Length: 154
Image (spheres, rainbow, N blue to C red):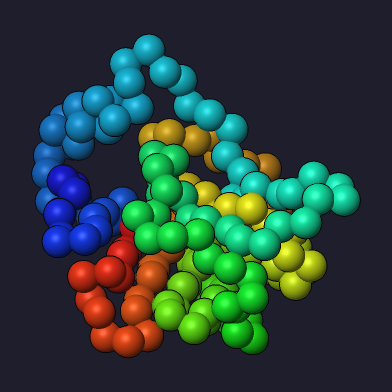
């Protein structure tokens, strides 16, 4: 599906089938590059031992960062965990929802402020991780103040 441009942001959904398979494969090949192979997938970037992490960012399936700013751990409110398929990360400005599988592995790292970034999965760009490893299939960002142009859905 072709990215839709908003005034301050970009919306992209990796789910759905609005185009033919050939057109979608051609688009994804352009995005990944013809000579590039799939990369190993990791749902998060972990900070090195002994290193303090004050913020984290969100990366879409292709690896680009969210056009917003880095999210401060200090602005994070109590995390809501609704089973291994969804984590809600409320901040003072946004409500960030991570949807996927085996996300419970992220909780301790989040609590200890050890995560540098979250990476969305797409089968065209990444190899399937081993069973039991977390996979973030969707990142949903909603503004808490009603500013929909700053909200994203990847």
